[in-house]
Image 1 (cartoon, protein in one colour):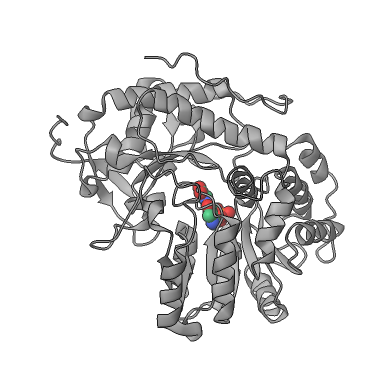
Image 2 (cartoon, rainbow, N blue to C red):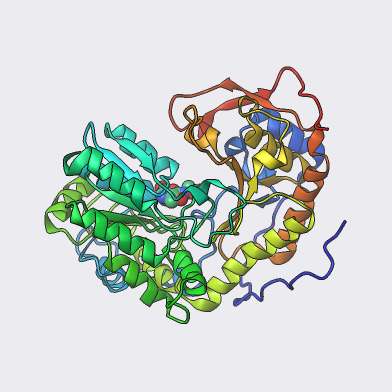
Length: 466
Ligand code: F0G
């Protein structure tokens, strides 16, 4: 079956200036690659991959203006003019007075959590990303996910499934008190929950609740421009407002933020942590110098700061965002035409396959998400990633969990023809889903297992679905 007259692919608001050849490994080469990688797609080489949808992080294409910005590098150790420009841009977008560049998002998390978190701390979020969760644990804290219940229902069409469950947050703050909760975090968009947006109304409630208890609010703002785009489409009273205006309304409710500029900063490496609290800023600065580098470069070449500043502004462009999110929707529409079960509504940066409905015959012990990423690679040399109990650890008994496979769309990289190819490949895997067997761990490391675990096909083939 081929989808016939769906919506046309979104018009690219750019043209190609440099091209990079992509490989086309044969079925035998793919099989050999899988064996060599112990069925862990993080262990594949890029020349074994045809379409790489592992992540949208640091995989985007820079614009001609960003490449030109690299040539403006002032590589002074201290006081580089690139830092001054970068700081001005971030202050202007966010209103946060103190801005500390880092080499990427998790480095910003390291600075923030090593500053604010201590053993016994509890850090609520809508849903923590894996590195956020790991940094809180590393500092002796306990990460808690408090997304609205709809976030756990892949079929719910609620427009703001990234929202925080405010009643649950209030309960947690009542229970733990200000002394145990050093900050409330909100991730925009909620990557772990399917790239779902947070509404301004929800953040307003979270902000006033946290502040009424004397607890600061920090945003994980990796995909803040995509969040603003979805808010602009969906939230009453905000239609027609600019991305910068909407973004600023969010930042005005927060005390600071961590940022991986590898997402909505449109760069291949870079990030920052920002705050408006001078006392926190002083400690962040000390941690930055200890872990990253001096205040005015923070683990990056100064030219990187210039490119990041340009990228942060480009990411607010409506033509760019409507094409970007249009591409994600285009991929989703083609997949839906094949009947492939997806987490709905479609989020900002990726299409998420609903693994429970894709492979209902596999139990969680049979690692269905990992089985699916392996089959998608086997079928068409496409790399995707499991976002579920493998990435985050199996859910506690009775806890809610999402079992997803994410097809993350890199920014400004793939054409619609390439995305149509992805849909065809996943459609073929779906057609033979009943034959897909589970996987098991051959080696399971203690921390962040998805990166380095080794897998093997499950010993006993599971019976076919009816
Ligand atoms: N927060 C969120 C919401 C993220 O999605 C990521 C990274 C980070 C923090 C950490 O940033 O990679 O620059 O250190 N997400 C990537 C992904 C890796 O594939 O979703 P980083």
